[in-house]
Image 1: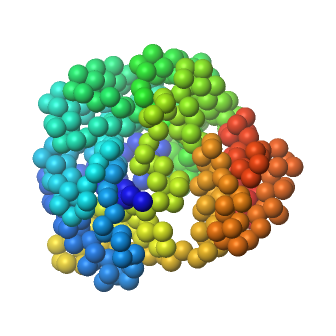
Image 2: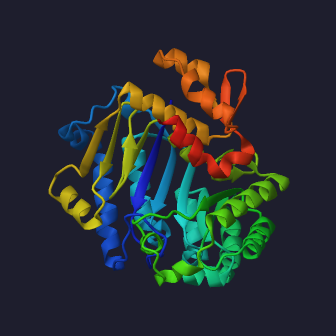
Length: 388
């Protein structure tokens, strides 16, 4: 068993119209106090969690940390020295055996000096928020970078020694068409990143664009958002195109060349333990989940005053645990072993899976159940039925 560490950096240069994360645009003067607060949280995590009622298994703190993920927000905005301080705090507190250290980066924030510093710190994986190779779509979404920034930044990373790069694309951005999506895919494949994440546009009231779509408004280019049918078609086109180029789909949204699946993100889907540090970060011990307050200023103030930043804490019941096993397990293309789960939780899963199989959403190979590959774009239907 090993431990993953997630560090949330909730700062951006601008707020994308589709973003529903707790991020903010602040002065760079706020970066250093925040990074210092994260270091304090790492050093004092056991005592501060205990004061909030978090019960860690006895061996938890001694687990080796093999993955670190800087997410956001835009962690690449921070100075390398600030990233170094947080990584060194992990090394001091935990048994560090890093095999994968990921930094989320926006293409326009990359330069040679930063890239060399990242490699020197032990960062060996960059997750690029590319989103599209159409400047029209990028501009409409409020992105700062343009296609030329991706072409400029990738060789810099390669020259610095980064051999593991992931690109994100979003299906459903304003002004996107089937043709522009195929063009983005062709450009992505030509650049040959080791990993690709394909996301469908999320429509909820947590983002400006989502709120506008739900209210049937036209701001933020809402009227130019493609239909659900087009988004589903784009996802399927991407799935087939990436498979034809040697990418293995290992999770609903994620594709990798052999050996390059995200080790850190797999911990989430496999319900392995991870600790989150920073404003809005989430953690999971196997028995409890907890989350820090999302407001970065309030988080820094809480750390300075000696308080725990945790504001949400949930004990995981057996019923919740098996629901999570099913939901997260089915997101993975390898599927889930129903016999193993039935033995572990002392329950029969046949009544829950028989209707899904009859509807053609699930296929089985012995005791292993998995989503039917050509139905992945409508996987939510299976999840809704499964959780009834």
